[in-house]
Image (cartoon, rainbow, N blue to C red; front, side, top):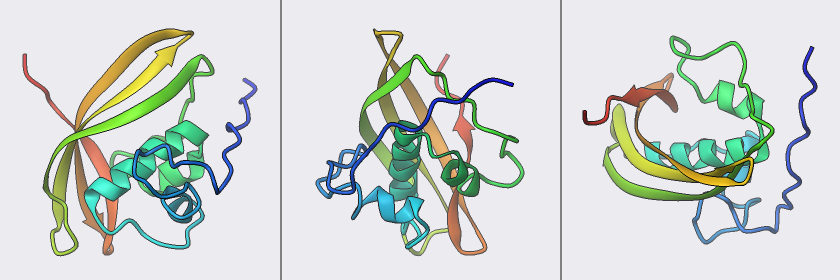
Amino acid sequence: MSRRKPPPALSPAAACPCGLSATYGDCCGRFHRGEAAAPTAERLMRSRYSAFVVRDEAYLLRSWHPQTRPAAVDFDPGLRWQRLEVHATTEGGPFHREGTVDFSAHFTDDGTPDVLREHSRFVRVDGAWVYLDALPTGP
């Protein structure tokens, strides 16, 4: 059995990792705690990025589509998320049923900088936004 490292401590008053100007407690933290639901696909994607930062497996699994959800989230102990850039969104608003978010998540892997570029697809399940999958990127 592997030992999981505890989530990095993040005060509710700290800047939110998702890149918006609110504090973590008022921004993604309220979604993580279950006090509110993400109103758009982009806000869900931002809250999922923040959940990777703080290693909130329960939130990640709750916000994953039941058909594509893994049994567990394997957090790489050498990986440190640095910042998020949202490049574009399609639909995904309060009155849509699906949407996409194109983003770059910058990280270091054992100190080496890298970036994950993804075009994610989100859908509503029982009225709530969930992550479905990543769309293929160019050749």
